[in-house]
Length: 223
Length: 346
Image (cartoon, rainbow over all chains, first blue to last red; front, top):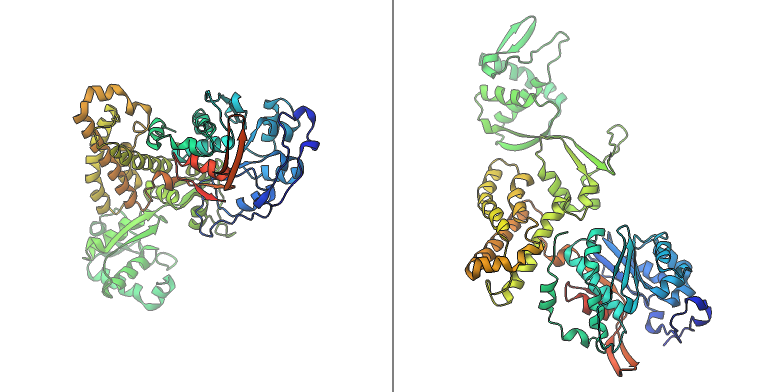
């Protein structure tokens, strides 16, 4: 298993709101994602945070005419491959990061200015996840803030951001529109998926949710 | 294929003029040869030879059709460019005067198409060889959108193809609107059925939808054959009834109001669901006739995630777990798949 040194020493103290003791890339050190040759064009493409920005660029070059390209990143790449990450930003439509990553990437403590800084690097929208404080969508629609879903018992927040992104993007895909208006409308429902993720260990939090119930509650509305 | 020069060289012109004279359809006046007005139902016909000894453009066309008729060419539908809209009625009149069946000269005119991008016309020039081909349009806006926009406008009507509208993912883009409507029907109806049969769910259709859909569905059964007979697969004609059934009333929150259910009851709701199903079928048939895909929600927009699939061992103040299925792609896809199929590369 490949190991990488922690980014702790390189992170300015003012941006350090949590500590990453060690980052192990593991299989991602040599991960070369390849899509099937006949993969259909269009649709939404999401690339995970763990992947090297250069590899993410390779993934995006394999799909034709995507309607929306979304990427995530993490402090390890912000510190280690910032130039590649900035190149990647020029190729994506949406960047999803948490607040500390947005601050670290932009070098600005103010979350709104940090979001605008990122927008200036290419993405048309930036999603800044703020844990229990909700999330912020910044784009042409302006600043859209949505609160976190109330949860009395938080067992494990691992993957809550990914689940949040999954719910949000799936909602956009299902309604068939990645327009600004639709993003603004779907935005308010995304924290529920993060809540489901955090309410138990692993993916068990999703097991208790009948799919039909959720589909029924989130029946598609007009675009 | 025939060239105009070939028609001249073959002597078909003289033969055609001889045939016209034999039928008494021509006369000479003012040094020119004229077609008789009463025979061709036109006030003024072209003459030959003119002062410079050349024939008008109608004559080679007449000669061509006479030659093809004598060669046993079967009547067929053809699409011709709008070089001169008056030419074709005259041609038809001459051929009918010669005793040919009217369907022998069955022509639809095709006008020029302007392509606009960002509000400006994309310049095309025969001289400089600059064209926007159909292949270019297919690649830029997709086959469905290109086909719909061309079918929506009658061939003889000049058309402006706005690439920006064809790419929009809003109600302003008619093909997106129609396909989206079908996808929503497709998604909703089986789901409602699976919840205990039609009429038992809390789902109902608003009355405005009902009023709009009923005549639309019945109209479509009449408009489809009519469009077929006229050989005008105009999306405006075929698609409009279906489009109206897919009005956004279907997808607005009003369709699930309790008020509707209370007012209608189970029987009414059952009838409305049947109506919704009929509307979906109508929409699917209309799209199929136009050669446009009728997508489901999954087809309309795919969702792909590239990320990790891992076994997580987690310790938190509230407990611990070992080797639990995790990884970013897993969390993303499990959450997203509740609403939409997610494809994973991990």
